[in-house]
Image: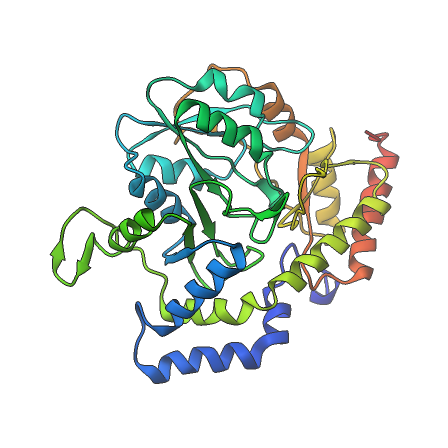
Length: 373
């Protein structure tokens, strides 16, 4: 029978909570004692602190990361009949958020080396219906934003950043989310800055967009019971805001620990390929992803050794039944990438011993199966 302590978990929420338990409990009880649970002081505080952290003038807390994308597009007037270009390799909430706004996602190929949007493939997808480009800063590394923003200016398009996995990551001198017109964030529990439930945020430097978002996230009202437009019910609640306020002050340290762990993995893993780390910015390693042609068997082997792994993501958007578009198009970078990737444990509480054990097991299996990349 396996001892629970022998399992190397993919995530370990209990370990993080144990370290900040007193602060979290105090924050939650402060909200409960206040009797105020929606659109209150905790949210105002978090919005101010998070905007400052990202380097934007404005932040609005919303219900989740998918709504952050939907509300961003709605605030820009993007909806039915409009197209939004985004990468083929992403989590389904990216395209779900676009479709929820009424717009049509148009996916492009990615770079096999790092899994990020191939900027050379964007221009071919632009037409009269295109209204925005939505780069996804996958796994915690920024896309190459200068050429994306140049294209957007050339064609009169908006840039909406999907920052669900990249909170704290940088591109040159700016944090992700502060580069395009709007940045959309998720604080799902697995994220580097994770709530204890669903949560998200939108950031922008544009006051007009900010004022629009204030209404859209609250049923289209700025004055109670006066609804000037159609909106959503998508508000970051006070308890989650209080929790995020506690965690935000630890985020830089947590991200630095992730980078340190990533360096160790890169030093120890010699039988598989690690994703290319680009020199133009600082990643935050929401996930650590390796590539091997023997991925599925390696995953089963690690499971037998009590090491948890996941695939982010096994099915590209163009092959998702819920997407239903571009299924006949060729996306060579995406397809090869999706067949080889495997996410292995990385989080601030991961011990050096468990990281080394994970790396050693990967090397043992791949060396024995002649899988050196």
